[in-house]
Image (cartoon, rainbow, N blue to C red; front, side):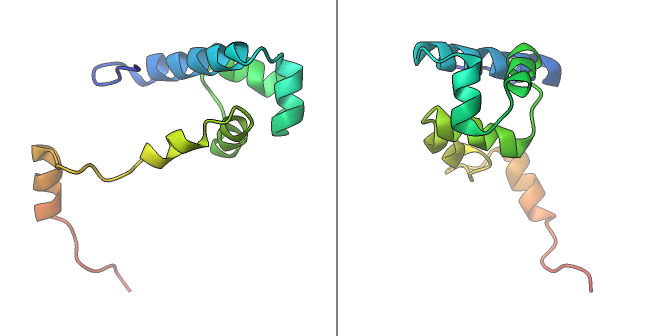
Length: 99
């Protein structure tokens, strides 16, 4: 599991790229084959696997091609039990937007 609680953003991105590469290799896919299936250029896949940098649209396309879209359901989902920090934020949350 990816532990990100105390990791700097660059390390989190690097780990995501490494995990994406591992997922591709588990399916025995070359970068070129994944590029064809996902419509994401092979050079973008190579950069993502090396650095973790990718656009959100390309990430969704890769996840679809790797049959991992269900993992996006957890991204930004509300937790069932809010943390103390979330409770503090909710207390001060605006009820209406500006005109």
